[in-house]
Length: 92
Image (cartoon, rainbow, N blue to C red; front, side, top):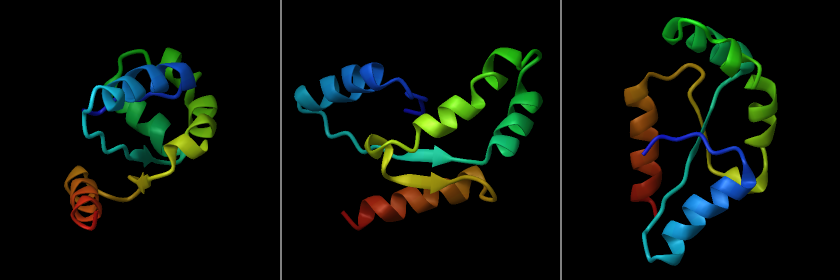
């Protein structure tokens, strides 16, 4: 399920809760440069100002160790990103 969780408490509440309940959670952090994120925001949102104000803090937060499995989406199509994740999962 795609979801951005940059707040440590929310991350632990949701992913930690699922893991404690016995759910097999595989977590990947999809990354892109701030410029790419802003470009994508402008394509999909009528008023991206709320999300734009959070780009740098969120990009910085996602560098924390809990977000260790990074997959760059900078120059990849959604299908290519999915293929990278599937390949990583198949090696586990």
